[in-house]
Image 1 (cartoon, helix red, strand yellow):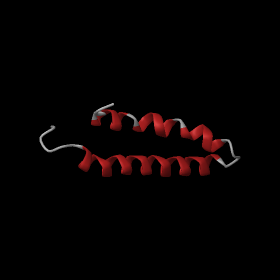
Image 2 (cartoon, one colour):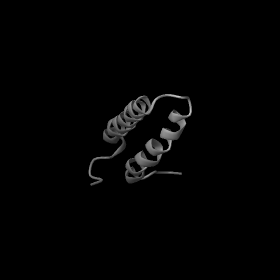
Image 3 (cartoon, helix red, strand yellow):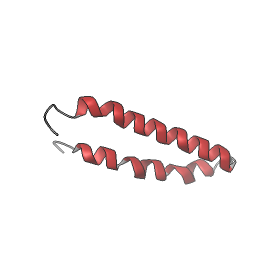
Image 4 (cartoon, rainbow, N blue to C red):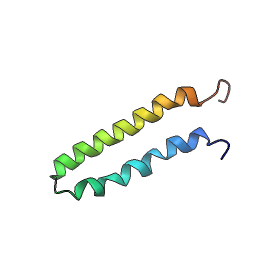
Length: 62
């Protein structure tokens, strides 16, 4: 694939973060612990996309 559009990186945040919650709940953690881990995962993914946005998008693309 020569180029993956930036819009797909942003749109991919939801599937990556939504599908991890059942995996986290499997290990017997409380609902509160699962929610905290899920929020930490979500923040990490969003931060990584935000940090990669600047070097990924070329000047003048928007």
